[in-house]
Amino acid sequence: MTAAEDGPTPPRQAPFVVDPYPTLARIRANGPVSILHSDEGLPMWVVARYRDVRAALADPRFGQDARRAQELADRRVAGVTLGGDMVHMLNSDPPDHTRLRRLIHGFFTARRVAAMRPLVQRITTALLDELADRDTVDLVADFAFPLPMLVICELIGFPPEERAAYRSWSTAILTHGDDPAAFGRALRELSEHIAVVLRRRRTDPRDDLLTLLLTARDQGQLTDDEIVGMVFLLLIGGHETTVNLLGTATLALLRHPDQHAWLRRNRAALPAAVDEFLRYESPVSMATLRFTTAPVDVDGVEIPAGELVLVSLGGANRDPDRFPDADRLLLDRGDAGHLAFGHGTHRCLGAFLGKLEGEVALAGLLDHFPALALAGTETDLRWRNTIMLRGLESLPVAPRG
Figure 1 (cartoon, rainbow, N blue to C red):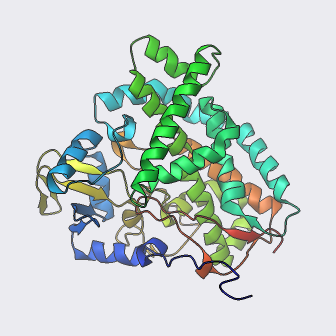
Figure 2 (figure 1 turned 45 degrees about the vertical axis):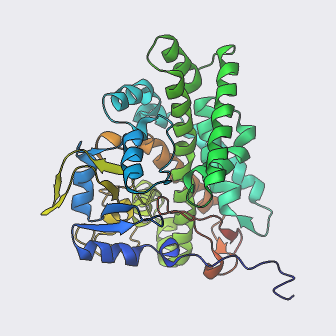
C-alpha cells in the first residue's frame, strides 16, 4: 500500500512535545529562572528546579487570578488568550479560592475516596472485560479515558452517555493555542451543557455534587458563574490527570520490562509505584499560569512584580538534586515527595481519587493482560500537543502480547 493510499502522514511533533526532559534539564542548568517567549512574543518566567518550584507553589505572591493575568498579558501583546474568564478554584486567589474549595472538600477526603474503591473496581473490571477478546486496543480511548470520566460523572451527577463530548470539549479547551476558534466554541458549548444539566438537577435532587452546589447557590454561597466554573473544573480536572497517568504509566511499563516484571511480583507496592509513575511523567507538566503580585527572589534572582510565571512540575520532578537518578523509572524508589499534584493552597483536591484510580486501574491491567505489548512502534505514538499536560493521544496495545 502506498503512502497516498494509507492516508496523509500526520505532522511531525515538536521535540519538546515528544520528550520535554532534555529542554527542562537545560532550563534547570541555566539558572533559578529563565525567560521564554510564546509564539505571540509574550514573555514568561520559568521556574523548573524542585526547591524553587515547591517554594513558588506555596508563595502567595504568585497570584492565580485569571482576569488579572489576562490584563497583564494584554499590556504586553494584543490578542493573546490565556484560557478564558470562567471563575473556578484554579484561577482564583484567597479568599474566593478558600470559599470555593471549602464547599466541596468533603467529597474528596481520604475516607470518602476510599469508600469509592468498589465503584472504581467495578468500572475497571467492566471496561477490561470488554477488551479481552480484541487483538488490539487503544488503551487511552478504550480504558484510560472512560474510567475516570465514568467515576467523575458519578461523583458530580453528570450523564455519562455524553462522555465523548466531554472529552472533545476538554481537549479543545486545554490545547486552545492550536485552534482559538475551537477553544471558544468548546467553552461555550460546555457552559451551555452544564447550565442544562443544572436545570434538570434542580427538579431531581440527589446525593451528588450538583445538588450540593445548587444548595450552596440557594444559600448565597455561590454565584451562577461560580457554579458553572466549579462543574467545568471538576469535569475536566477530574479526568484529565488520570487519563494521562494511565497512558504514560502503561507505556513506561512497556518500555521497562524489568520494572514491569518487578511490579507483577510485588503487587503490594502498587500505591508507591503510582507515586513513582506520577513523578516520572507528571500528568500536569506545567502548573496553571501565575503572576507576581510583588517582587519575588528566586534563589538570588528577582522576578519583578507584574510578571507572568510558569512553574514546571515536570521539571521539578526530574530534578537530580532532589531525586537521584531522576531520569530512571524506579518503582521501588520509596520517595513520595513529587509535586505532580502541586503543593500548598492549590494542591490538587482530587489527589486521593487520582491515586486510587491509578492503583485500581494498573492492578486490573496486570491481572487481565499480563503479556500486554505495544502494537506498532514508539515513533508512531502521538503526544498531547500542549506544554501544560504530559499525556498520549492514543496508545495502541496488544492485550495478549
